[in-house]
Image 1: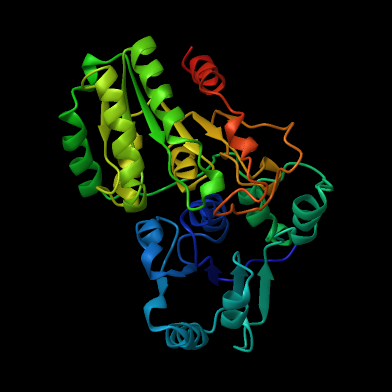
Image 2: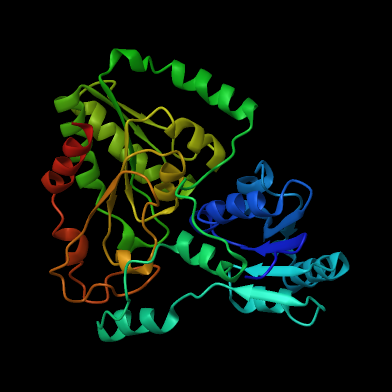
Length: 349
């Protein structure tokens, strides 16, 4: 077993879900090296709020992508000056390889992205994955030769007190004590083939509000505003005051703080699924063009995945596509509202 050095850089530049999935490794690493060691983190500037409040990180190095290659070059110069003993590359792409190479660091480890297994499954529909290997566990395994092992405590996200208090005040206006359950719906995703239909989310919200006298809260970023607004209006037209739409109004940390008030989170395969898992909330995840073999599943929280394993063209991509390549979109079209409702009912009971 190798001994961990005292000055370590972790690289994970993007995106939200992937960054949240690094949190178990950071926690375990900090416990292993102690409080006096340096554990620094390199990340894109637009995602840095996710790690700036982490108890386990010493210094956050931000990549400014707005200035193009200049930002990458400046970040590399910062890293080179620091003279790290170990770089842990959890991105393992062209940008991170550029950052870690030729800077005199004696030890570099990188995550196994299992690209060959992914290619076989996406393009030839051959599942050669030895098991479902969650991404957080893959991150941890990059340092197994140093004696790093999973501690079973799941994901973390650190939220400053001022954000917690601000969101608590906002949520208080909903008077959640007047409802039996509070359920989050997260209908967004970066790519369309990962989005369950908005009409089904609306129908689901109505069923949940009716069955459980539930408050339905919709979350998403600015790209999800039109979808969430339409879903919320449909729910409220059926059962007045049952739906509240917060899409586009919160930062990611504010959203995480608000999810704390929910009994269950219903999400596509998206960043908010991982945020919910980081808050240890039960998750019902809806998977369309992607599959759990890729490792992006709710980590160490109560969850169920609703998917159609009888659709032979799944998966068509590991990140999703703009449109269904077969023009039928059966991976989502064949998932009924009732299927998802039953899974939520099972969790709530």
